[in-house]
Amino acid sequence: MFLEAKRSTASLLVVKIQKVSPLAIANIR
Image 1 (cartoon, rainbow, N blue to C red):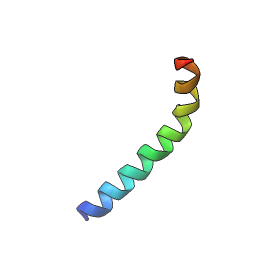
Image 2: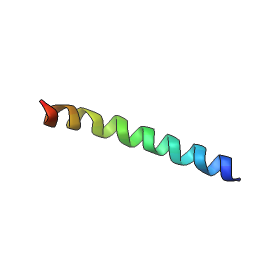
Image 3: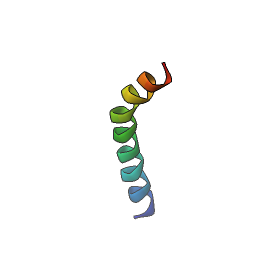
Image 4: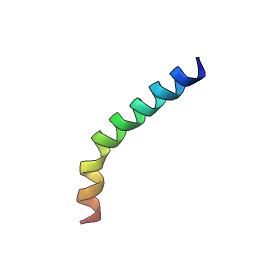
């Protein structure tokens, strides 16, 4: 159960990062 929860949260974080990273890169430049 715990490992499954960690995996799902990790995948959600990856999706968030993929959505936000273009904006973050644009802001840095």
